[in-house]
Length: 276
Ligand SMILES: [Zn+2]
Ligand SMILES: [Zn+2]
Image 1: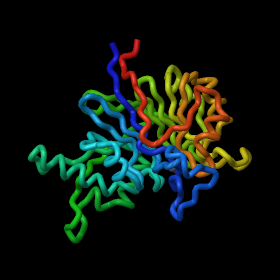
Image 2 (image 1 turned 180 degrees about the horizontal axis):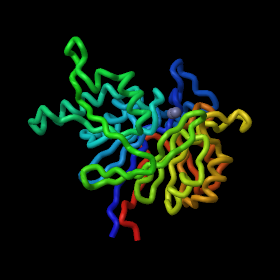
Image 3 (image 1 turned 135 degrees about the horizontal axis):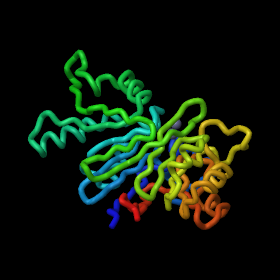
Image 4 (image 1 turned 180 degrees about the vertical axis):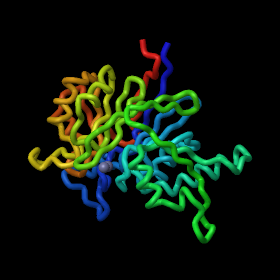
């Protein structure tokens, strides 16, 4: 029998969210609540474990909105600002755990690839080492994830990484049981597609929607998602990292029934391993 988990879409917006700062809605209908998008992130929850993928600038408001009161680990896709800039608020996750468990040694574990960790340690050095003025003490602890490696949190929830091409850089995607999470990708090679084979549900980047394919840069579009899914075979697809170009109703009308825009607060059921 397989265990289950629930994924909550904490945010499905592009790097600037929708609307952008300055209240720019683009093609999106401001009257449709599902067009109001915070920065891309998901929470995965079992009965006793909560893991969040990425801590972008909206991390605090996302955890408040979804009643997330404890986080066992944060797992990063890549170090772009829209995925990491809320890292300061992990301090309060650790401080609460220290208070509740009466243990002043607790640090929140974060997981990322080598490149992301070294970037985070430079930009957010005060999260890893005590600041010279003593105001910041280390409240997180870093763990490296190797490419295609699995990580199990709390002896309960397993995620397996795969490598995604993201423009001239890269990001990690994650497979969680029968669900795949592929934000921030512009190309997937055979190895990555193989890692996703057999999933039922795929949450995938469509941040390039609404621009000319020739301008494809760091994000995917519908054409690419459809092409990749010929190999992967997911029966349900949720589009994420959507920009103000991607209106909820318009995009849904343009896609087959099994493809839908994600929206903030959407919940997705997950079957964890062992799958039969
Ligand atoms: Zn992004
Ligand atoms: Zn990115």
